[in-house]
Image 1: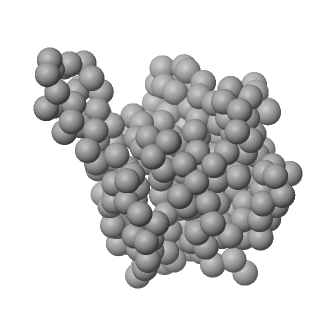
Image 2: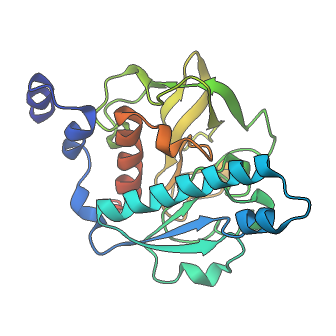
Length: 253
């Protein structure tokens, strides 16, 4: 009833989100944000200088910085670490977020058995995390020229109160969107438009069976963000990301 009344008042989908997940869960919790913190500096120092490469990495860094600021605005404390940081840096963290800017070979299965909730934007580590199979383009991948997702599990809190069906989540169609094909124990929330076998958002509850019969040591979420798409998220996309972060940080009932 609350969601219906809010919709009638003309409020955005992100406003209705409060009915699905508790925003207070962020208070006092620490996010470990894993990204590549040295790639840009190395590109700037390289000889000969590649201006196009530097500009691309500056965009990636700006999106990481904006996302961290957004997380702080939700009420989280954020500790940023480089992709090369050892697993011990997870001590004291309540949620791990792996940026799409990381080198997948550097992170690989580092956090696979960590009993801390985790969200990954980097689909190249889905296999290492046992969240999907290991074959690129078959078990996970990236599609170009995307802006829509298809909400297939609207009642779930991860759907952020959005209606079932097609949702426009990016402000332009010329963006990349990551996807994966999760195991049977996953909950799929959204798929790419017209491609129901490619999950843009999916999750595992703690203890759920992942790929290869591995059990999720804590909540796990795969989210479609690419390196430069945080700043391109429409209100619907931000609502889905907010729901993912708050759901992952909420202890399972």
